[in-house]
Image (tube, rainbow, N blue to C red):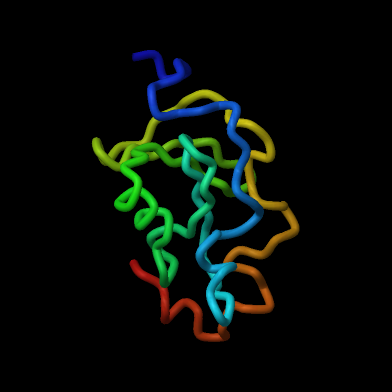
Amino acid sequence: MDDDAVRPGIDTAVPPSGPGCVECEAADPPAWWVHLRRCAECGHVGCCDSSPNQHATAHFRGTGHRYMHSYEPGEDWYWDFVERTTFEGPELAPPTSHPADQATPGPADRVPANWADLIHR
């Protein structure tokens, strides 16, 4: 399949769920993340596997939505959870990343001073 072709399971019209990880934002107290990933099927924004809560992978496990896209400024790669590979694909509905002024890791006011000791490697 041509990498720019729209695969079943990728919806180029659906917008992202917001500027941050849905579950981290809803936590009490709100949590933080290292990087963000966007579900290419439904737009759910979750935190990456380096993040303490790994919500993007949890979204895949819970929904079966196999393709996710980086939600970081300047990145446009996809990840296929089933094949465990990266690939290039079509542009998704905007915005294509979290706001450029949002810290990474972030949000800045929630990231603990020892954050590097808390991430998954």
